[in-house]
Image 1 (cartoon, rainbow, N blue to C red):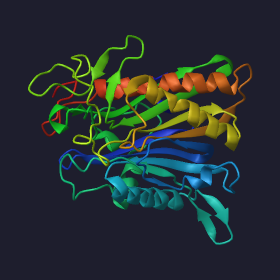
Image 2 (image 1 turned 120 degrees about the horizontal axis):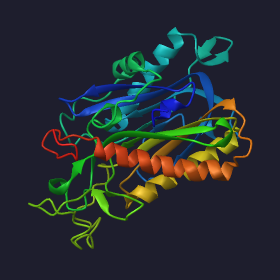
Image 3 (image 1 turned 135 degrees about the vertical axis):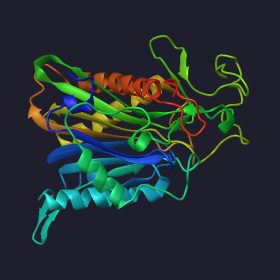
Image 4 (image 1 turned 135 degrees about the horizontal axis):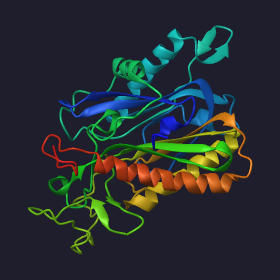
Length: 322
C-alpha cells in the first residue's frame, strides 16, 4: 500500500499545478463508475452536481470528482474532465449519448498569486492526462497549490496548506483512502497530542497564536474573511455501498476535519467531502459505522500530510521549507 487514496482499486488521481499563479485543480477519476455521496458542512461552499448525489435522485454513479482552486471560477475545471471522459466513452447513458457525471467543489485561493488566473476546462483536462493509480503528489500541487491555513491573526500570520492523502486496510480486503486539499481558516492540530502542527503565528514570530493564548479573538469581525478558506476532500473505498450509505460515509468522514482543524465548518469555510464506493469488495465483518469511523481518521491523517508536505510559496511559509 502507498498510503494514498489510489490504494483503492479503480481510483486514479491527477493534478494541474500553476505555481506562478498559485492555483490548480485535482481530479479523482473513477472511470468505471463509483457510487457517490457528499457532505457539505461549511457555510461558504462552491459546488457542482452535488444534488445528484442525494439518495432520492436518479444518477447512481459518478465518473470523477474535481477539487479546485479559483473560487467559483474554478468550477469550470469540471468541464475539461467531462470532455476527457466523453472522449473515452464514459458517462451516464442517455438516448443522445453518454453524459459524464463530474461533481466538483472549490476553495478560495485568489488571495495568493495571480487572482486573474483560475483553473479552467483546459486545466481539468490536463489533470486527467496526468491521472494515475500509483503514488500521489502532495503539498503544493493541484487544488492545494494556493492553499493557506491559520488566518486568525490575518494573512500576515498564515502558513501554507496543500494536498495530502492517506489510506488504511481493514479486515476482509476492505480499503479506504482519502485525499484532502487543506485551505482552512483554522489551525491544523495533531489529534493524538492536541498540539498545533501548523497555523496562525504571532505577528513577527514563529510562535503559534493558539499556543501563545492569543486565539481569543479568533474570527473577530475585523479578521474574518468570508471568502478566504475551505477544506475539500474525497474518501474512496472498494466496499459495496448503496447511495444512502455513501452519503453516510461522507458525513462521518468529514468528522476528520474536526479532529485535525480547529476551528472548521465556520461561516467562512466551504468545507465539503465526497465519498466514492467502487464496489470491488463486500464489507463482510466491517459495518458502515466502523467504515465511517476509520474514514474520519484517514481524513485527519491526510490533513496532517497536506501541511507537512507543503513548501514555502509566494512568501507564505510551509513546514517543508523550500
